[in-house]
Length: 423
Ligand code: SF4
Image 1: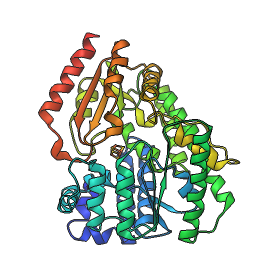
Image 2 (image 1 turned 30 degrees about the horizontal axis):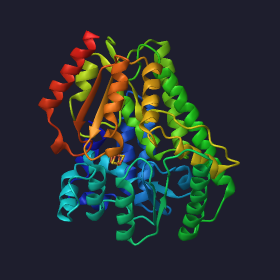
Image 3 (image 1 turned 90 degrees about the vertical axis):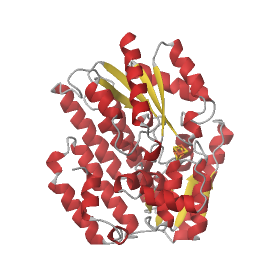
Image 4 (image 1 turned 90 degrees about the horizontal axis):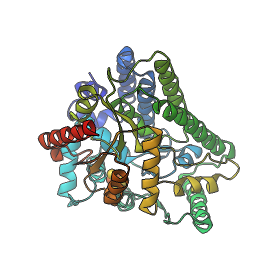
């Protein structure tokens, strides 16, 4: 039984909304998870789940000022202020597993939220208006990469009548851009502290940056191990750790989970425990995956032996942070994202991943409504074709399962696998 089945079987119907605000529900949930510890094939995944439950509990039980953020905002600032970060986009993915997506989509549709917009935000909107999300004390958002987040989060701040802080990120990466972003980050940090009545604690802030650096180091170790042949972890399993990239940096938990994952990968590598019995092809996955059950990974990895050995979302694109210059180095992190600015930056980063992970093919999951990920794909496809790397642009929706077409998806995957065999 997976975690979502577990929760659904214990928290059914109208009880669910109230259960989110009840400490006993989190205690019970942790006990249920702990009772199934042996069934987790990765101890790191088990630890990640326990940490995530704690973080969710902190938000719903309002154990500190809750700050909503989009997944590209540097969360080191929030952990450094001792706040409780909460990412509505990540909550939308969880809502799918909890079986509240259909209700939430209906609520969003009833409020005329456009079906053309990204479903992560539509779903988060519906969950919020249906009373499933913990109310924020403030909302922060970065403007880079995602054009849906600033509008969506500004509307959420207005609905809850709380302050909204937008980090405006330019497309350039020159000194003026660094200074511009660093000044805004500093201003947002102290404005948040003022608005939420949080005392400034220099030591705590620096600890968050150091924790981020430690997590980065362990993630680099994980990524190095994933570059080896044969793969020791399936993409299906590795995808679960992406949550930390989106909401965990700056917390001690992220560093601990990556350290554990690196240790387990190292051990499996020494014991030559393979991700699949026979590795026939190695794949790179771009953007996210569907968060509802599909046969995609089963078909690729278990049946065809085509292992997703790396995800673009796990790429470490930034340099270590400097606690002595926190805002400037966080500005550097934001501006270093390979998806920011000219498409050649993303293409270059993806080609480097192709080499580092020795991949035979690339799959891009084209999430409906996501312009940042799908724009420029033609140029990426051309660059991969020049290198004779098969490429599949798989269209779908990460959280709206009504857009999933199993037959068409299977046909496209089978065609892609044929192409891989022919290379
Ligand atoms: S999928 Fe794209 S549009 Fe949707 S939240 Fe993520 S970056 Fe934004």
